[in-house]
Image (tube, rainbow, N blue to C red; front, top):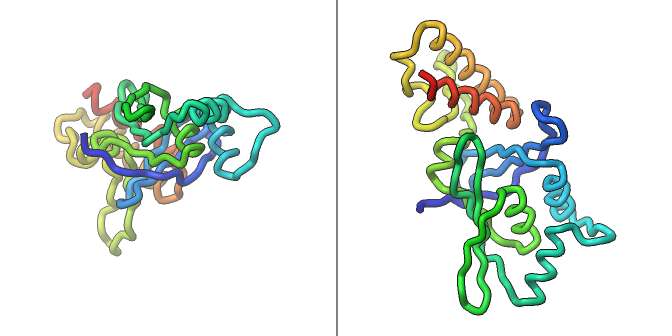
Length: 203
């Protein structure tokens, strides 16, 4: 599996889900960003560690770190390796007594663990190609606006065979997605990306 290393760009509240947050990951050696919607508890756990704020009592992820340290368990890396029905899946790659173990986890929990261990975070290239949002470069005057990659290429993927109404909707969503990325509204971009994916799959 080809994978790319990412880091945390930031967290922001999501207007499309009560109590949810958008966790924005960015590609270290590229220009793509990956928004993932996570719960408030996990967002708080990640934010507290990033800000080096120690809670009066350990969070669940802190407890895991304390137990891991007591038993000499090391977290080597986190890999976000699957995407099914708009849901991301991850693995925590651990090492204990020289043996490697891969433990299934939600990306939010996995990343909350990663920041406590200082472990690198990776995303499979397939997922980044499908769900990543590419940072747009400045457009040349008079050039057609580029559209972030969704799946293969958002412009060429199936537009020719769509009915006129669907094609118009598809182009409208692409334009909105482009605007959301330019304004760095990544939670809105994630929602539009998912809507475009649904429209493409139903065509």
